[in-house]
Image (tube, rainbow, N blue to C red; front, side, top):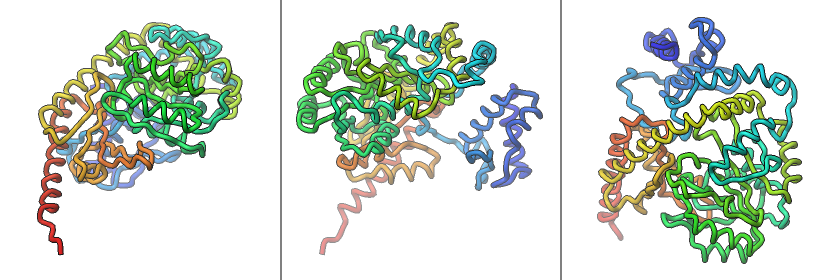
Length: 456
């Protein structure tokens, strides 16, 4: 048994023996690291595991505490986490990356212990520049910047002024919640366009671009969150033609490019010959989200505006993360890691889609991506996502109600998102069976009420 497992079992044992009671504070990370003669990262990982299993919860700047109700045995509570969108902890290369952090402290000590360049560490930018070429993104390193996660990159892209001097923004519907919140904070007018299994209606897109003075269109290139949809190369070219025709810019969020099995599927950026695409690449979903590393490629004509907004946002993204990731990329370890997780997530998605095919009848529609983290389940019209989500919580099945991923005008309240990133493979089939039964039982109940209602 490794030290990580020992820490987890030790804390669970204290809770079961009531030596740690509800609301009690856990020992500090430093104290536990000293007690078990291990690194702080091992304790952090153990505490995160306990939090995922709902034994403890964290309070910012305070520590970790035992949850209020622990009336269960560890093995008797089976949790189905289709909600969390962070990477599978079991597939993360903690030891390899720890070596890179140790090397980075020596190599990048000047940057770590002082303010480094706000554009990002130059050698990391060069490594990411080479890495992006595998996805047909051929960018000048001087146009490539490091941001503190994709959320910062999105926030900067939607807020900074663009050469067309407009303010209105267009988004897919549904779309990533974090991006939607950033856009709402711009106080601009926000327009939406439906994303279906076949993509977006290009005639509708042209109508919006022509009539609503759009500044930019935010898109998720592949495995869209929450629908799982990916654009075809043909549609990318057609969309770019409309973008150019109506003097609009496109913010491309290509957060899961590594998982695309189609080697001929290129990003919007690769087809852009008019410098209208702002390309964002996150590493959080395929690597360590706590590292907070993303990159953004900004065209020349808006580079100065981006530099000003980035500088105002923060002096620089964390240098220790940048230095360690540069070493990890350059060593080839990241490529090995990606090949591993591609198989992990593809296998999970295959199990998920097979379970949906087995348990869902024709009244329950769901998206069917060929990879990625997400699918959407569309409930029958008389069933609300919030209602089903709450019932599933009582059965320890956690899914996301997609209502907050829609604009008010679209008012969709019957979609739930299923995410496979953290759930164990052996729980997927049973979890979908539970979801299917809950939907069917409540559909029958609501149909019975509708059929037997007394009309005066």
